[in-house]
Image (cartoon, rainbow, N blue to C red; front, side, top):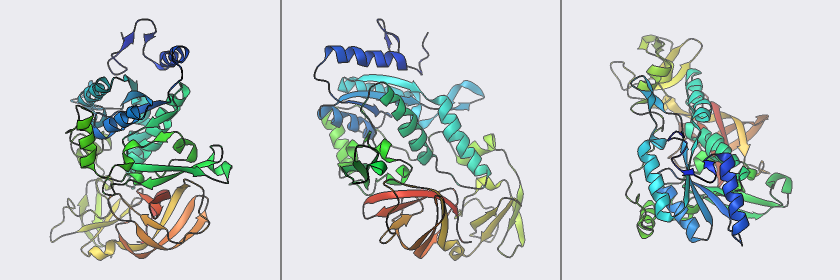
Length: 405
């Protein structure tokens, strides 16, 4: 019996739905349908953005297949069979299936539970334990959506993978085909038309090989309201579905999740002078710039640094202590190769803020750079992403190793 999370669809003449049999489906189609349409796997989440992406591609003549990814679910009430994950709940899967039915496209559920736990959840906990503040969405895009899913899709005959990300791609000739990795063509990743929804910040770890096989159909749409209007036009059952920007595998609060998986590790809270002010329950419960939940009288207090070796949280009443002009970035990735110069490059140190002007940028080691901003930035946080732009183009990014505190 095929578990529900693999797929409820059974094809009597081909057997259970799995990677091998999906490839046989494509081969059978190729033998009976000419000319062939370009095949696209669309990651359907059960939300409106991916649904409209699928509808637009079908309207443009692609052969579209809907894919719902099953991720690791945090066990509820101590039961391994009663898990929870916002992105792959049973309700989300049913909405995605309903979208596929409305569009008349194939629909499969792929189980990435084990890989998601290893590459995303374990990474998240490991980084927090090391005193850093990770970005699981960046890791998920690299390892799962445009890593695991893309590779499986291409292996069974798909031409592209598409998602509902707010981003745009421009493919153009590039004299350096070694950089492009796609017969002399390179892809430039641009901010979405809707700057308020732009998600390029989370895509800086992609490379040219991946970009050559990715489609972002809704990146050219001016606003979220326009996306919802299109959903209604296509008679999609998710036109009014609410969206969430929380970490998908955390049901209630981050603190509750961390108490379960990292426990507590009490230590001292000190000011910049080294004076003891109180106790904390574990450094992973705090992030740089945090104001609420410090637990000290006479505030407001701000978390300005962590001393992981001594297990000390450093706080200040002066919000200016969070300001810094400098950071060190590691694991830097350039989407189209390192720029010839760093003039007119801007950078953003977290999602939801405007890119800031860079005064200077210096390479200090393999994939490592020192960045000095023209103006001080608030709460530069190790573990978060710093992402580089030139006008609307995403050039690359890296992981913040340290600020200048």
